[in-house]
Length: 225
Ligand SMILES: Nc1nc2c(ncn2[C@@H]2O[C@H](COP(=O)(O)OP(=O)(O)OP(=O)(O)O)[C@@H](O)[C@H]2O)c(=O)[nH]1
Ligand SMILES: [Mg+2]
Ligand SMILES: [Zn+2]
Image (cartoon, rainbow, N blue to C red; front, side):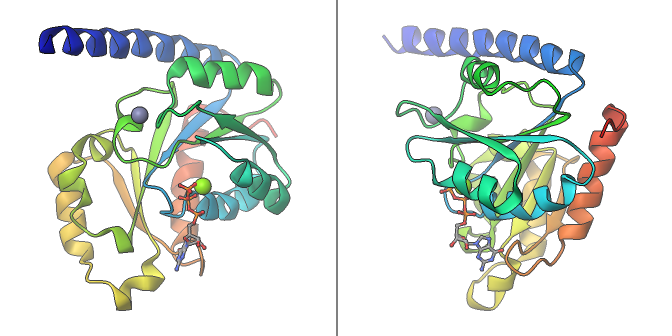
């Protein structure tokens, strides 16, 4: 019984990976760079995206997919506060997106003419990391109130991160959080992720993150807008 359950999951992940690679190729052919944003519920994903998009929209034609189990609050916030096209993706109760769900969302969203696609994945530090979305890069957030030990408890999320933004640094005075320990814990998972310290609320550290994101995007595809 246990064996069967494991096999089903492995097949599911292999199938998802194949789908994600095909989706990646499809977006590449359209010249669309795709960023997948993952983190815990309430860690500040939408707040950060609003700040980033208001700068990035000067350089790119952006589309945003907001994934949640229910509600359309985040897609509405993004659209109202940035003016960019956004779509709310409901997962029918699932706590992560599969590549197939991402492709279905992209197809109904209509991405032709865009050169940057951003996905705010379901707030969850566990299974979104297991399911390749076909994105060019994963931006993972870790907010100060969650604690500096999270990379030890949720290893895969920090293994698949290309960039980690330590967020809500304005709350540091009221939490027992060590940047040094957090960086050490991230490095235990992998060596390569760039790490940023930011406050989406106050704007601290946003410029460095923006610059790194632009470098990543522009090193892949030439700017079209
Ligand atoms: N102090 C502080 N609060 C922040 C910061 N960024 C976000 N918040 C607050 O954190 C709460 C959650 O922010 P959201 O941006 O909605 O978080 P989220 O990760 O998108 O949440 P879900 O989509 O529900 O998973 C809100 O009350 C924000 O105002 C920050 O840098 N500093
Ligand atoms: Mg959100
Ligand atoms: Zn899940």
